[in-house]
Image (cartoon, rainbow, N blue to C red):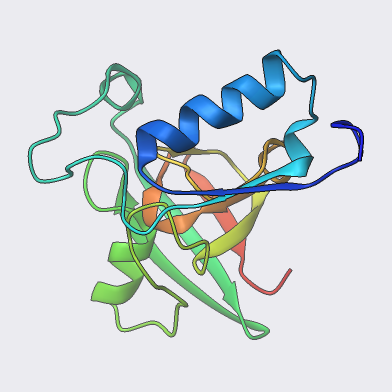
Length: 153
């Protein structure tokens, strides 16, 4: 099968996954949508990680976040520099889907319907999904005063 028609599934250590994926994209010209991968754990150590420059640069604002879950709407206030959207939803005992909380599992995927968010890490969504507004709520912080995410899409 020519490289441009095959789908590649990569699993293994994070460094290997990244190297193989980059090789397929750059050297073999395989479209990103045809490269799938699976991490067994988050690729870096969250306990010892420092805040990224991108996270540090987001505005420190209070947002009204609304989540659509099973056709019901739930709203809460959230500071952009505090908890992730998923963590605040869990704190409020909302029925949000989750698995790993490390940007790997994709169970907490939702689509941004209004406003904007900053996604710290993404090891599960394709470039096309991100372009269509999908995010991993375990990694998201609001960057506008109003944010609406839909888990039902």
